[in-house]
Length: 404
Image (cartoon, rainbow, N blue to C red; front, side, top):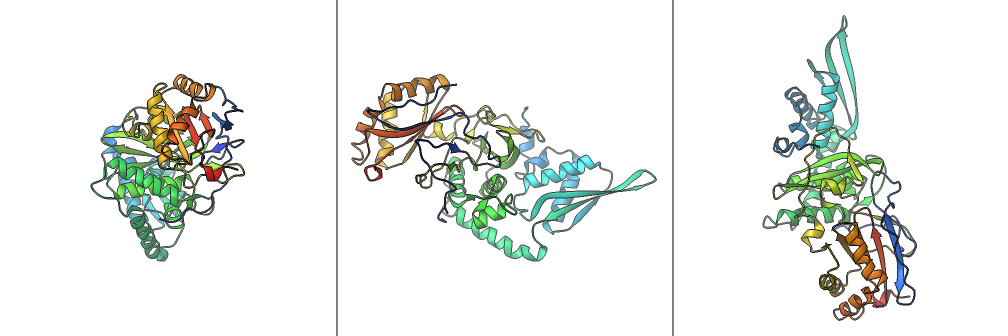
């Protein structure tokens, strides 16, 4: 596995704000409260609380989701476009279809085919008319590399994909496969804006890119494993963004790998290889608090929770369950994890649990018992973040060698 190259910024829990990586680099700190570094003698509290399903389309065309929601005329154009792009042809000439239908087919192609990494986002139309009657319309593609470069580039992509998928067994559950791909893409990728940063090629071979590159890489790798995954575009907190829709055990979930790779600000070292699972297999309701699809395609309503990371790992709390909290803190200490993230079913539960842990200082008792699993665990000081946006809490566990 490629070593993750330098973090964009560092983590300082006392004054830091956690920025979720995305094509939108705006006010992603909204709803996050840093409680800072706490001690028995000086405890500062955190901040206060504040479309119809198209399931049949999902089964169409070997994981080619967008093709399935096109009408028959658009599908014909789409298929001709796919054949042209595969051969790096400069254009396709169409007859009997409108400009709108042609543009829809082109957008569907980009949504469905991450492996067409040489196809850029640009295109143009040339409409040929005779006596005011449209005779034909030519759709011109834009490519990021020439046909002669493709054989070598495709080999690079295949080699990188084989490396990222190495060790994933057919005996694994689909959940385990999705999590492995999610983790590996995040750990090998740095969020970097630049030329062709939207393409899978730059993420999978160079470990650099932005949201569309992250999402297309996850889509490509999961499709290779036979797991349904498609590309979704829209906005997140007001800026353009892209993420994924996956199907696990017959249910649909949203997945945002870019926001799983957070940027930290501050002056101390960021957590090594930290992965955020706040947007791993979430429902439509959870996602739409911060994300909004562009509405171009009908998407299924995601309501299942069985494969949500916090549900799957017993980290979702519906009340102040002290014994279970003790268990997760002790397990984290035993494995010497620096970061422990838990989630709550709603804001009232979050307020209740954090009130007991923080206001009533019961977290110190949890730390003292957890230290039985690892004597180096610091028991009189902890750092934490509380989030309104996803009803969660992020604890930074400290160990003796980290104390200053």
